[in-house]
Image 1 (tube, rainbow, N blue to C red):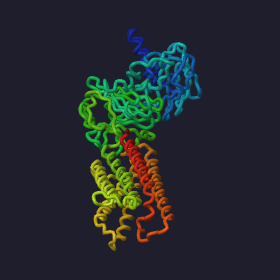
Image 2 (image 1 turned 180 degrees about the vertical axis):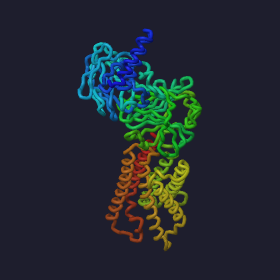
Image 3 (image 1 turned 60 degrees about the vertical axis):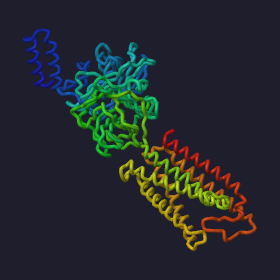
Image 4 (image 1 turned 120 degrees about the vertical axis):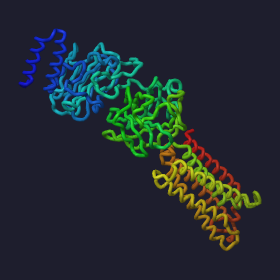
Length: 612
């Protein structure tokens, strides 16, 4: 103790003994201790005076958002078991660790500790339990501490680890919540377990959820959004959001995979921008819950002032869950929307970097199909990651270029001699079937072409080469239609030139269409299951090429069998002879199989697009 401290101690103690009554002596003595430690602090870690409050008397308020975490190697224990407890985070000078009854956090410490590193940590006795706390031995900087906790014979059903961490004299965090460990088959409390301390100066209380969310009240007491539909929020594959009206506030729960962040936003439209957003960010096994306002398609800027209360979170079994309460009306904040109006609701997940920056969501956000009032009639709904217009765009293009064009080309190439004597509406049947399928392709392509522009409201800069190739395919389709309208007669001098242009334009359009569809299937807006999309397109290409090769081989065999080849019937676009007509039954069987196969591919694609 320095001389100044001794003088203060003698002076104050004299005043207390001579001028104060006995009842005020205790409070005066406590003030004396706090004044003394405010001069010297607890550099040696002997902080028994703070056993109950866990608050260092440093003359300043604690920090609101913890940056250190507590981890354990087991979440279940029996009396006598040993659990490894690990405190880690940015460099700190002091610490104080205890275990307490999770349902009564103001109760005395439970259990005892064993040291792992005696150089940086020491045992303390709080209350009547020996070695029931651990603290530092010096002000030397450290970034992690490991100790072992021994469960007592009379341990409560649920035990939670708490820590106070001092970064430097006036920068510290009090009662940082750690994991809750429970005895086998111990029933969970009906309410979340809160870390309470009158000395914690934060804008909202923080708690650790002890059990997963329950979806049994969805549609009854809660307004829920789930993807997939009816999924269990305790599963990492379930994206879950619920709203429950509680007088003048709303309790909000959000759950999903634990890597990165979860977020939802309230929007007046189905576009990102000018939205009221809420994020739960996993920062190195500690969850930060914050509000943000989305401006355009730029990353959200987290608000410095938080309008949320009763913040709770949980990280377990690969699932991140957070809950918080928000008032229905926040007149003081223009960026927070009132919760008694109708909005489109976005739900997204993505990766978060070190220090909290979040990255663009790896999948298209889940968007409700309509506008909903979350404080209205409780519902249990889903949503779609792919807008309806984009789904229709993909479906129409698939019908046009995978089904209609493919069958039309096969018919024109191989069925002229087979259907040469069959007529439909005054024309040869093969020509009418070919023309009908190609006109269908032009119609579906034209309709599908405008849908993304309607959805995006203009050109998309996020789709890579897909829109450029799509415009090229559309131009070739229109050019092919115009060229077909000026088709010269069969024996006209320009017919040979027309045949070449007709074949080359159509073939180029088909190749580019398939490439464009390959690129489009990987875009987030369509949200096809990966790698299903690639395998399906590869399967279709292999199927079409296989049928084409089979019919070519069949035609070649007929030519070899023929004794007389009519050279004047051989043209650029075909290698047909009169002998090919003999195999018309085989070709019709192959065509039937080919059409059925195309229909199977079409059904599979539509089922994936519309998640049937």
